[in-house]
Length: 129
Length: 129
Image 1 (tube, rainbow over the protein chains, first blue to last red):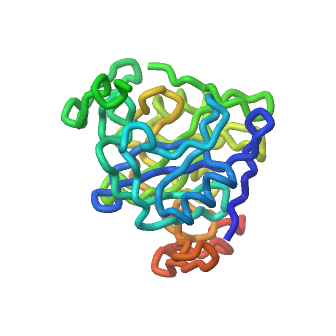
Image 2: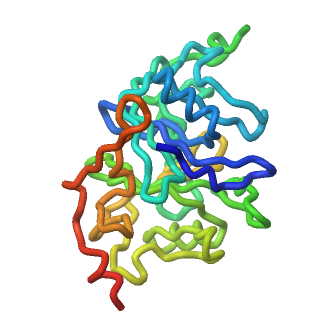
């Protein structure tokens, strides 16, 4: 079943893609996805996204080795978003965290709390090359 | 802390917003959010989004009563996405499902499987008036 790539960002037609740990339910990251990245994800069972900053299809983990093995694919009611339930190798975040959502906004909206326990690798080593 | 509303859709500056059940971790929905909707969410502790189809700030549950009480707010590494961990009253989806992601794409990408157990209300009644 095709997604509805209805989000026009620049001249691109995109849908939203969320990655979630298939075991714990932790939300790992959110990105955009285009038709090519979606089809590659479904075919290879490894998550691909569309990078709006680099303007290209992005095989998650291609450089770091931190790929996302897809266990389940869910789409939302209006088909403009996809949820990948994945086995995350290494960490999802380029900062070395397991999840990109390691920063919590505390009560008044001004302060933050960072989850240091979420750090799983050293980005200086992983992205050295 | 301010979000980076860097996704330009039409003439709007938006970030991505995900709602997740604060107890089970189930991903409920994903939408866009603008500065006003984000600030209202932080202040009222009830999720607000930005509807790109209606071009307006959207207080989730205003009509249906199916509001999302915010327990935690997390932002991602580049601050262009927010994750609300919420207590969902009723269901998140206008179709009557608890989560918008009730459709699973099965192995070959062509077939789907709908989670009937995810239905929690009758939209014909809830959205009647």
